[in-house]
Length: 316
Image: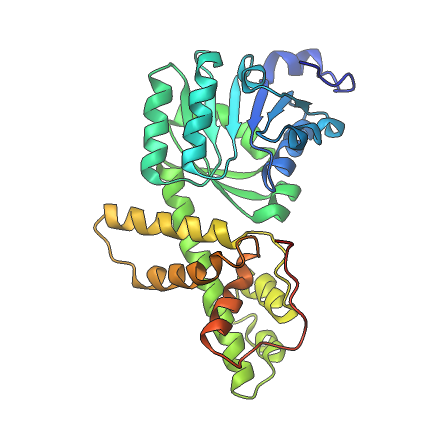
């Protein structure tokens, strides 16, 4: 395996106190997260199923690895940021023979609560510690190092991970293993529901004869104010659906909310409707920003369209 000759060497003190990090999964979120860790002085080894995505991190001081074994074999901390719980499980299986006993695996992907508990048990059987630590804040938050990080696991393991997590955002321990995923599902429930409500409000404003941009401006600062009204309300007015968070990811998270609700014996009627709205556009617009909730709403209201701007959509 060839590593970059330009990776900055840490100080002697940092070498003694700073763990090597294996970062597995270099996607829209993983790329800026790995860059933040390298910028904080950590030795970061990156692996991705598409090796070119890991290689693209070399100029940031990250060591790309073509094989997962090379990434994890000397890592005190392993971070996974992957597409689904199924993929996380496959990657854990591939990495297990090369993991250091006592290493700490931090899964920052969004998975089901039950999947996080299964990962914890599987790794514990091999003397590997585990935190589930999903995030919120999107690509912009990953780039700025301002992600909300919801962690589940043992307090001692969280204390070990906290300096690393702080390089990427604001970590909070919310309970034992699996609790991070519960918190993320609560977050996505609120995000997905609010996106759909903002879309309905803006489309109603226009259909009833008001200026939707002026309505948005008028209600900001009142009880309806939110980051979603601020950022995604403007996205809807601009018809800018270049992601950020994607429809396919929002749908996956909302489906996981419904699984968790069923396991807890709950009926969540609003979440069920919001999930169906995203499902209605997932085949045609899987990579569109989740503000495309507006497009799902317009699909249900033929002849109604917010504004006159052309749609900005990612390439299929």
